[in-house]
Length: 120
Image (cartoon, rainbow, N blue to C red):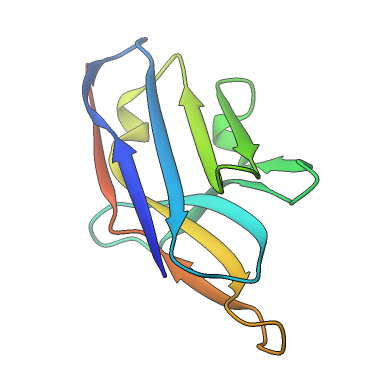
């Protein structure tokens, strides 16, 4: 089981960027999925999360600017980021709570991280 993230890069302040993440491998079920971010010296923080039924939550710092969406058939999520500011600069990590087998307990899986840099 792997989470493959894509997107990220360098963008100017006020610009937009999109991140995608897909789950590959044989699994039984995916529950919540989310994007986290981390900067050097700080703890990883939740950016946005989405349930199987597409209920969403956002960090206060990104509300109104970021949108998380999900495609259950493709087992993927997308994070559309707009009106980016330098404080959004971080390594972004995709996360999924999933069950590999029917009788397994849900476990957290992480993508490899993708760097987003917002220049002022």
